[in-house]
Image (tube, rainbow, N blue to C red; front, side, top):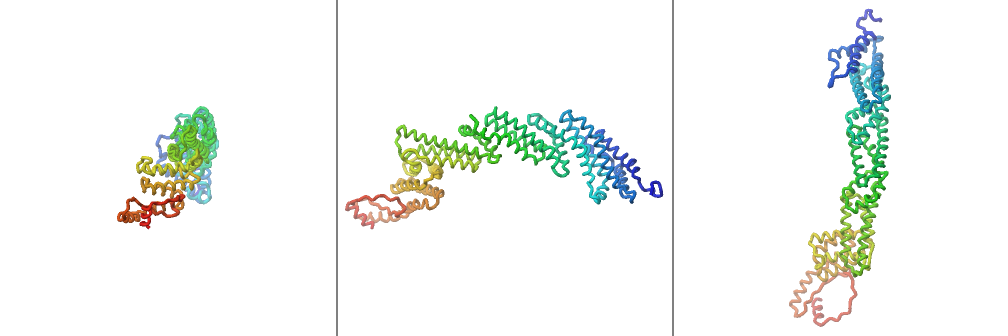
Length: 544
């Protein structure tokens, strides 16, 4: 039926739209947005005003066909937003282009905030559309439609300029200038919203240009720093830059960008100049090791551990350096021998120099390189080369065994109980690098036998501790004979006591004692032909 007939309650489209919705809601809303909202304003329409407009929309959407205006209102909702954006927002933004990044970003922040307010109120007025018409026809919701309109009419037009403005501000901040981080963050959130539930728009329109800009920025910085700075100074700047980029993400970028941004920085300021930094004359890795620059070495380790295989070149230099320091110990021993010093199997000065060197760089590996397996291997490989390089008539295995003999026998090194164990620990560490451990075992067993049979051992407990350490390194088979030797002396003590008691009853002027040893445990010696005095023969028969 036509309007004005018997159905007085029917609202015609033009009447409802022009006289009610547009005049009382949309025009007022646009005027308020154009005139500027008071700070903190949250309610633009009172409850009575809102209910009146909502009721008009509700009635227009629930009238029977052909007076159900749901489709028309849905279209007019979209047209209203699009017209406001193209007639008011876009010209204002174009006017700000070229006036400076902060001015443009401030304007788009303002316009985006206004758009969100408009979108919210239109959604509230047309709520009934969202609940029924949109749902039944599988259309974009009113909020989605409003968002798409902003993306199509404003964002796509302005994103190139806003991205350039953001990148300029980020580079300004990298150069030490103070920027409006809150402003940048709000624009980043706009990029995130334009993905309609994904980060596609943010990734394509901001993140990718940011990564390219970052690569370009740090490529220039790398070229400057590598010429002017020492390796430690360069790495200080590199670490500061990486920390600042992480903070930048936390301050105003999307968290998903952090790993990508840092990877670009690492490639530009670390990976591309790693070898140059490691080998830089006067300040490279070797110089830092030689001068015990712990803080610089720790920073170098931290930074290059960020790179895939970034520690390998550093570990190689560390190995070469430790090897060269070990060779210096060997060369000093050779120089002493060349100057006429007698070559003996007892050279505690040389063994102590190796122990000290190993101690020092074991500490470096643990403290400065966090005990990383690559550097443990570097230390091991270097000392395998050094410990197995013999100088003079006697092998290092013999020198190390004799050093143990000095520590363990009475009248040798003057050490406390704790110092004895500490020295044994360190000599066993060196022993672990020997390739011919059996040679060490043979020499050590001979010296152990002399200590035990001549009663020159300073401490049975220390002897047991040393054998336990060797057992830990090489297994039971390696120390079984040494353990057997100690066992013989322990078992034979009762037998000796019994024999001594018997000898006190026996009329003899000799101080005669016997030690029974197990064949196979003890070193074999060539037995000389001995003619015993009658008195000694009588004592032997008494023992038998």
